Image (cartoon, rainbow, N blue to C red):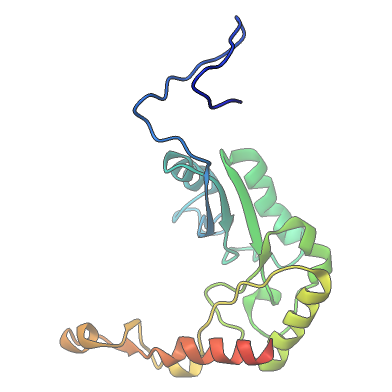
Length: 191
């Protein structure tokens, strides 16, 4: 592959005229929800990866709020099979930090680390400080990443929209900003 003003060509050369076009490296999105397996009515590997390709994305990282949850090699295999079968761009899966995304028991990160881009309980913050500390220590020892979903459940209080002028003016139950920054502060302290 060459991008140049003058390229030597022969009969096997394929030329794409990109005059007037923007040419760049493929984009990457590190947080997508393809929802397959388990919630295919929302999105599939095929439809999500085709949408990504249409937008110029060549690599996307799929979050683990799926069914089965990718918390073991066997559960992850279901998603990996769909990726191999249907993806039109590179789809890199996340595995969960905890079994079932329940925040109580750490997954076997060692058995999963080479099969995923990172670990996240996306959609659920790990509430237990000791579990998160163990996850951080394990991830550090294995040289892998954690992408934390930062949310303190006890501060949600039934909210479903950011707390502020809009939520107050329209009678919506707001979620305070502390529900996010408090867990970020905790994770910084743990790290």
